[in-house]
Length: 263
Ligand code: ADP
Ligand code: MG
Image (cartoon, rainbow, N blue to C red; front, side, top):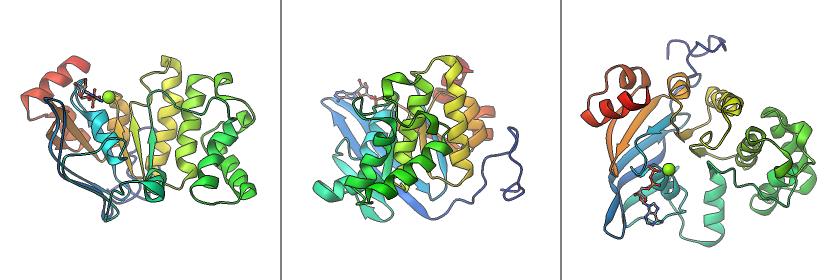
């Protein structure tokens, strides 16, 4: 955008510091049912390298299923999903590699309760990426510092606040050096006073060029960091637009109705 590379980093400057590159995540004609429920209907979505896509939509519209499908936590019945040109692997080591390339941050943190913060962050690189333990610890500390929880490295998740735990979850994804990170309502389970510390980390990742797919109801984040908003309803992508267009002039009645309830 016009502000790229100007060095502004205040809250009002657009986050889009890096141009959107070639297609990294491509969903083409993706279909899935849960029994008689057609939860994903002919989903076509391309996320470019460095792009931040915010997925909005009412509860039950299929947003989580969409994220989970990209990480192959859900299988699909029709269509294709590719990451960096490669179809999603079915199983085994290739699947573990995919889950490293495609980080996921959940609403419920999902940290390993019986491992320290630093162990949570080093486990994946050592097991999946075959990084040696000392190097994984060095990088792990660096990443914990980046998200502001390095002083908690030797603690266990239950000893941390929700906001700190979620920043550890982001650090754990980052430690894998992922191609893209999927965030599924990462701040929905947090006490209000902790929401911003997590969003700030996400905005800074966006500005550093991380490719991100973010399901969130945080409109401030969408305005500040999204290249594009994708609006889902009833298993379909109903509308997509840059945030400034989507929030001021939504085209579909479904999106207008949704926005009238949350804004
Ligand atoms: P969202 O994240 O947009 O709220 P979800 O993707 O979680 O929506 O769910 C979409 C629909 O699919 C909902 O009606 C939900 O109840 C249903 N659903 C989700 N997971 C399953 C499952 N494992 N089995 C059956 N139905 C499911
Ligand atoms: Mg959901």
